[in-house]
Image (cartoon, rainbow, N blue to C red; front, side, top):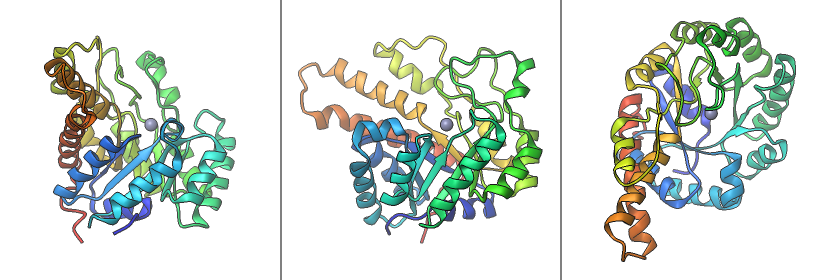
Length: 309
Ligand SMILES: [Zn+2]
C-alpha cells in the first residue's frame, strides 16, 4: 500500500490504547524480517534508521528498499529517522521520502530544544512528514547514575505540555528512566509510570519509549552458547513495557534485541557450518531470528490485527 505517515500509525494506536513497534534496520535481512513478521500478524509497523544506518547503507537505498517492500504488502508501513541530530540529514530525509523524523536536541537547554524542534516541524509538516522530539535525557550505557540523581534526567511534565503546544510535534519521547544499549542498569530496571501518565494527560500526544529492549535471557543465551561475550547485559522486562503502554506509550523502539538475536543466529550458523560460504545461507538465519523477535514484540505491544485493511 505504499508508505504511510508516522502520525497516521500513531494516532490510531493512541485512540485505541496500544503501541506500535519501531524497529531499527540498516540492511536487507533486518528490513525483510521485520516486515514479514508484521504482515503475518497483520500489524502496522514502523521501520527506522539512525544517522549511522544512513552513513552505512546510504539514504537512497534505505528509502528505495523500504518503499518497495511496503508497496507489495497490505499493512501500513512508516519509515522514520531515529535520533536525527544533523539538520542536513533531517532535511534530506524529509525531502526524500521518510514519513517521520525524530529531532533529538535533548542535550540542548529547553528553550533551544524547543526552537530547533519547531523549525523541524515547520519543514516536515509542509511535506506531510511527522515529527518526534525528545525531552529529558535518556541515558546511554556509559551514563550509569544513582537513583537519587535520576530525577534530574527525567522529563518535567510541565515543560512537556508547553513543549508539545509550542512546537506542534506529533509524538514525544519523554525520558522516564529507560536507557539505550544492552547494558541498561546496574540494579533493577526502573520506569517512572506516574510520570508517563502525567505527561500523557497533559499533552495527549502519542508517547515514545526509547531504550526498551528486553535483552531476554533466551536471546542472550543463544548468542553466548555460540561464543558471544556479553557479561552484564540487562534490559527492560516485558511486564514493565506492558505497564508503560497502559500508561500512555504508543511507540516502542527496539534495536538492541534485534542485534542480539541476529548475532546469536549468525554465530550458530558459523559454528555449525564451517564450510558454508553462501551469504544467503549465512544471513537467512539472521533474518529468521529478527522475524521471531519482532513477532514476539508485536504480540507484547498489542498491535497484532491492527494493520488489517
Ligand atoms: Zn533512542
